[in-house]
Length: 168
Image (cartoon, rainbow, N blue to C red; front, side, top):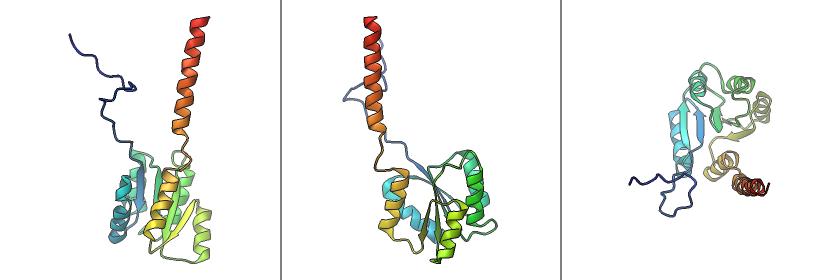
């Protein structure tokens, strides 16, 4: 007799839990040291980090899949970060993706230009490790995640509908 495979949603304590899906974060920066810093800072949070040194390379990454978040430096070779941000906002596939503009400038006009281009957040360099990690987490994994509550209500509704079907 062949054993039946376990159903994915079977409440079986012997089932090995799969790790949660890692959220993809695209980091667009041509400065290798900054890319390494971002990687080190976000490593404990287990994001799927993808890096691109130019806006053109970042567009190719976006052609392969849409990330949960884009971090983009303003000063990039070729197409600058604000032009890239505008292009992301004009693309129907990516217009919903949150964008954090990262810049060494602390000028309020640069911040205003980033927001006008479509950035949702602006963070200055040098990065404060705690603030940076908290900002990324608040965007990628919001504290008010209702997926568990919604799943529980959906299961309850499915059970009640099944019960009503038996009664009719």
